[in-house]
Image (cartoon, rainbow, N blue to C red; front, side, top):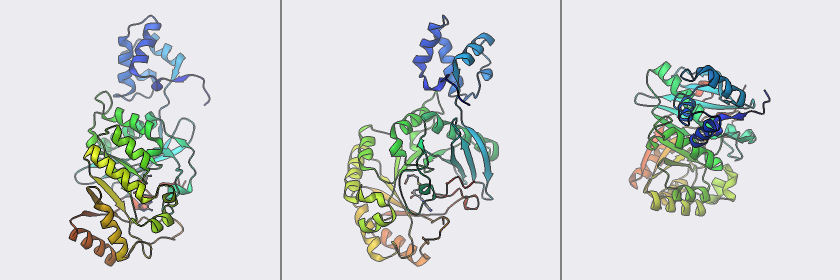
Length: 346
Ligand code: SAH
């Protein structure tokens, strides 16, 4: 659907107000349209029922609303919902709703595909096509909030940037989306309920600290030994652990926010005592906690989750060193909606 009309949501509130003044209308009209576009998430100009027919037609003649569309929705038997979301240019990303007793979490994508090469992650098999715009990120959250109200009778409570892509490689747009999500003119959510998960881009972690962001930080660590980490996350060669560690110390000093380390224990990869020792050392640099996450197998079976004995060793050694550790179970595995399984299987 080729069009030369401009996406109206690329305009901020001030620009919308100016547009209406130029049209000989009141600046206030811009506020009304802004409210329709964001807090009411209108998909069409026709929906904007407090505007005159002429105004709606004039907007139609000048602009488009590049809203995302939920292409397919799959429901898991544990209540998890996965959306395949179609973007205005036909590309698809996935986002997931994860309900638990106390919260409903949206897991959203930040890029189409991913430029990183984590060998255990299905998304890494897709090449990075492009970054998502702020509104494409925002729309995923709105769609999941609607589904949460419809299927679980409650609004969305949390957001994690753990879908497709590396959020810190699309930092500006992620930040703009979070601004809108947390603004009273958007969804009014608390930044404390948002987690940005990164494979660890040191320069961008420092930038986030300088920007004094209020959301939480999770780092996909998986190993605190360079040789091991590079073998499973090859970009670790470019961003080695020493640089990551320095950035994390900087983050903590500036924000006083403790860091969560995401960590999968795999058989014959990081299931030895020396792996736990290295993790314990790494955790001492900045206040942190460890989330041991379950491995979600992807097609070729190269990686296998370690046995319970190895997990128990991690838990007891971390606890002995007063490091908080949680063991997290996966959700939505039956529909390929769990961590690392997002890959547009269709
Ligand atoms: N690029 C970001 C966010 C996307 S991945 C990051 O790396 O953090 C979200 C989380 O899922 C990360 O912690 C990632 O390491 C983890 N993950 C990837 N593949 C996985 C798999 N097959 N099983 C379990 N977790 C996986």
